[in-house]
Length: 258
Image (spheres, rainbow, N blue to C red):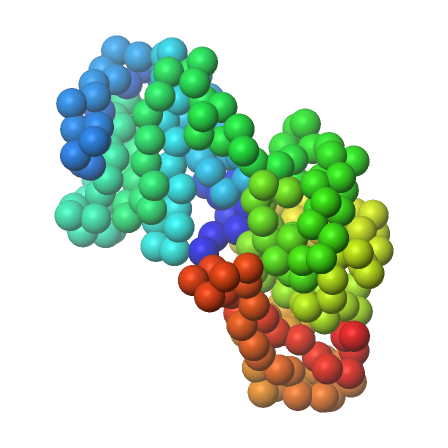
């Protein structure tokens, strides 16, 4: 699933192309919104909120969540799409651009005044202009008995971190993903989470090691059975989550993390 930096980059690309443009055609290819017509409305801005893309079009907010397979692509009028048409969930056209949302996991349209119904539950946005570390700290600390990885992945606590960042964050802080929140140095953990994602928000390829070479960019994520880059111990893998249906992959070094 795309992480907050990926969604931030997608929103920035869309905003750069579409801000101030007038929608000449809108085609919602989901039954719930099939009759919505935004033709004639102005695209005021496109922003990210955690893992959500928010398009402010006229007096409306169009929210999309990429989930695992979703993506937004920009094309010039008449340009051939690089993904099958049956995967398109929303097509927005202006005189200069065609924005196509493929395989979007979630799609909603509401009046701008009701935007809070869609994203109001989210915690502070790590890449937002209104990032509030103190509020993030308060929210995470309230889950004192939860494993630190579960609490940091909860978008209600802070918005934008995905499984890659959380696994890497736990390694860098020397914590097992299962360490209870109450036993973690939360100010340092949240500060590092913010610095990591900000450092990657403009990168083509995410790295937490500082090494941008292929195969060297991450410490533990996706590296089960491989040698730890610090100590040589084999990286282990498990599953962790608040419920079985919400379990996520956890990667850790049993020597460097405790």
